[in-house]
Image (tube, rainbow, N blue to C red; front, side):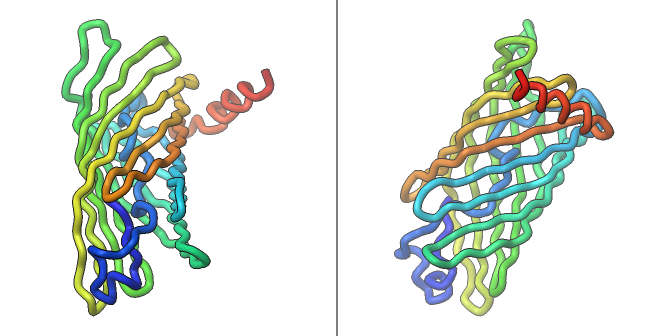
Length: 225
């Protein structure tokens, strides 16, 4: 899934045009969605796509526990992309859901099915993405876990007066999660594969609602050691 130049799409050249970076995609859709121990876990995410057409998406979310096997993650953020000398910042919003499908007997491995919805509007149109996939988490210690997964991104861009363009492309991701009390830090890499492959850095942090100051103190202590 890659962003086509909006002006070229409007001119009917979407298929043949050179593409900038990927659409406004939230970080949590490219990692393992953990079911929080508390009812609500607040999170901050930043995903930055590298390359000739960089995209930065910074977002806030809330991981809401729905039973023992489901987490729902409503999200809002700002998406900034650059195309040559042109840049634009738009508001993006959406939600994600993760369903725990399997855990091993030792409690070291977990498998999720995951789905998301992402949307933003800009002057002259809008775009949407629905990533559907799976992710696995492997716990290596009490404070560290690894994750990996893949998704199919179903992307649509609508240009006012010029119709729409849709495509479906895969992405794969992997990284690590570090436990900070009841909160977490995560870092990973995403590969968005279409006509070309775009790489993105994916960073995130989460903390229980009402426990943000404690989590931030724990994070700060890492840099004072």
